[in-house]
Image (cartoon, rainbow, N blue to C red; front, side, top):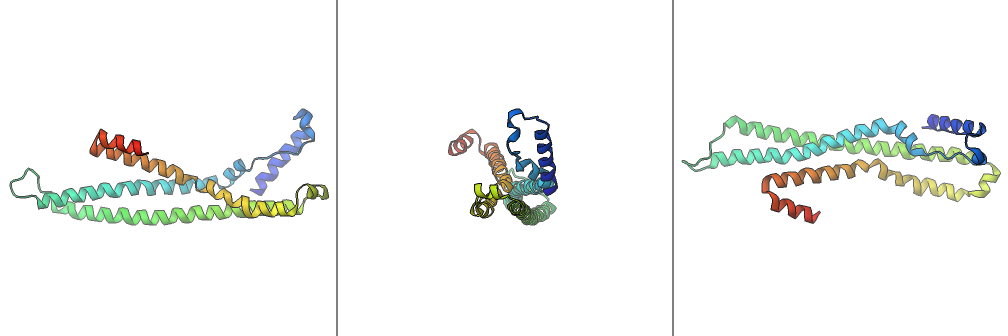
Length: 202
């Protein structure tokens, strides 16, 4: 992040020296840190998002496997002479093993996703606090008059931790995905009335 920040500042200063900004050449360069954060931690964030997506799909898969198990038990408990055909016994063991694997894998991936995103959040906070601290050490006397040390400390202790909401933005996408999938399953199982009821509630 520091290397990318220094490169961006060098480019901004070079363009200002060449007069690329016209009458705004005497102003300080304004640099957005979000693209720099994405270039620094975007790969790790994308990996965490993939883990979250896998957790959501497994979370949706477990009720489907449970439905298969219920159908298997109903076929074995059906009274003689009914139209329900008794399923093979090996399918019961298959459904039970599949349900165990799905729930175990979901628990593992969920914990890994939370750990991964927590580590990224700590890295982002540490990176920004370090950059602010280094910037405060390099401030000139004129700049210190414009912004007090209390404002710098306030940036470190209050504003930087708010970036955790950006790190956890995949939780919002995950919620929207789960709502859409479960709404589709409700429509598939119960038809239009239940679908309209869920849509009204949402």
